[in-house]
Amino acid sequence: LSLVHRLDRETSGVLVLTKRRSELRRLHEAFREGRVSKVYQALVVGHWSLGTIDIDAPLAVNERRGGERHVVVSKAGKASLTKVMPTEMRKAGSLVTVHPQTGRTHQIRVHLQHRGHPIVGDSRYGDPDDNRRLKRLGAGRLCLHAQSIAFADEHGGERMFTAPLPEDFETAMDAVFRAS
Image (cartoon, rainbow, N blue to C red; front, side, top):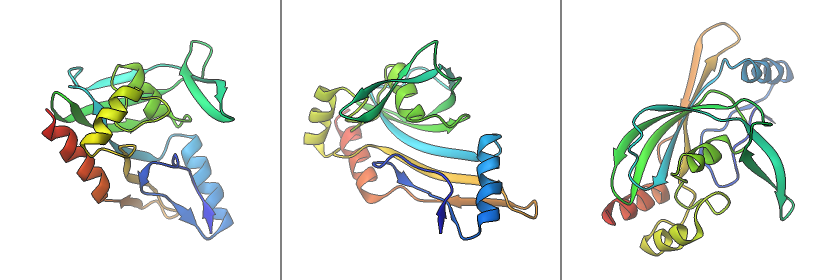
């Protein structure tokens, strides 16, 4: 089996693998050309008052922290576009649906943090005080979930794979919403 794409270690959800090398090459090309549709759910800190927006902010890997990649918004970075739609909003946190249009490292996490709403439990891009407070309430994970992925199969038919929110994500969401 070959891994077609990657998720951040702490992100739950759909992951695509293939058995055939030819299919791996075809899907890699589809990802590069933007012919793959991905939908994520993210629980963010604070009341999302921005409505449905496009976050168009270039991203660059220009720092390394502890030997790991750290991504920042930078004019010198690569073009990056993320569509965000609010799903459920409360004072302490909001559930948003995210459609990344490009596939940059940590794109969703950095874009949401850039707009003032880091993902709950994000130890790399979130606020440590918010994370500690929300963890005490029961939100002890990175609340980013790859809900679905869709692409054309080798015969031109549409393939879509989905994954429900895991129990620990729902527990975290309930804890954050109760705090509102």
